[in-house]
Length: 200
Image 1: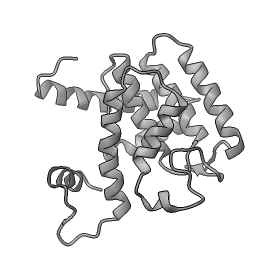
Image 2: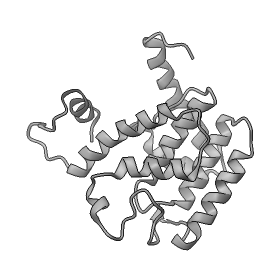
Image 3: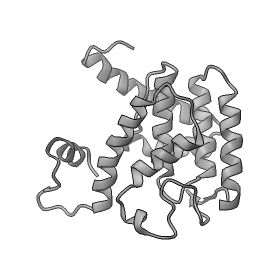
Image 4: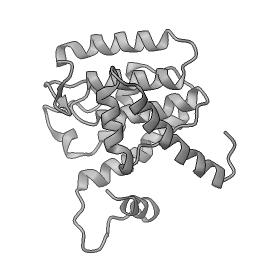
């Protein structure tokens, strides 16, 4: 959905956008995304756990057509293999163990840096624990963790998506691609904070 369509739905709570066809799941997930942000703000300082990550997925996908499919485990790990950007991801039987190991490694660090949050994100996306919605859940987790560790959060907007995907793919070889993309997004977020005179 476009920025204007999203704003229109949020401001009017309707979907009457003239001369355009909107995917109902996109509308539902957009509304659910706002609910996820509320959950994240309410739990910003809480530890990152499997239960919380699954809850975010449940809130995001609740009421979508995927939530009515038997093969789709909304709020739980995937049942079938999937891939991202042509790369293999963890097979369903390995997801729970890989997620526990990732969270154990991440939570062992007392204070997380910007780089730690990005590293967690890349590893999360490579596991790709859910049937769908992994990117959105992963970016929501980054937002939460930035809030927790007093790092200005950021939102990857459409104009940065290709750079973001390149950064994920090249992380092992060149961390600067994803880092610079996220710092660019953070600069835009800081401009919003400055405009509304919110200290950071």
